[in-house]
Length: 91
Image (tube, rainbow, N blue to C red):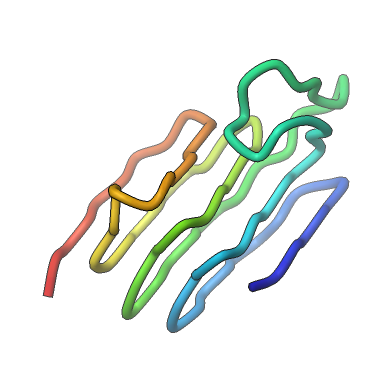
């Protein structure tokens, strides 16, 4: 898996799989997004998209404009923090 820490806004994140990974935007704290701290300037993701699978991963940012997640496995401890307009599909 990957560990990505970003300060500042993010345009598009488009991946085949997001598995055993985390994406923190202006956030420091636990992977579940609870009890951590955000930067004073919010981080926004314009688009977060998986085309195959979102599994055992965390995305924690201030705001996600659009999220498209394919085949989300919610049994493995998925964390999703941030306000988002989201759609999911299960193949």
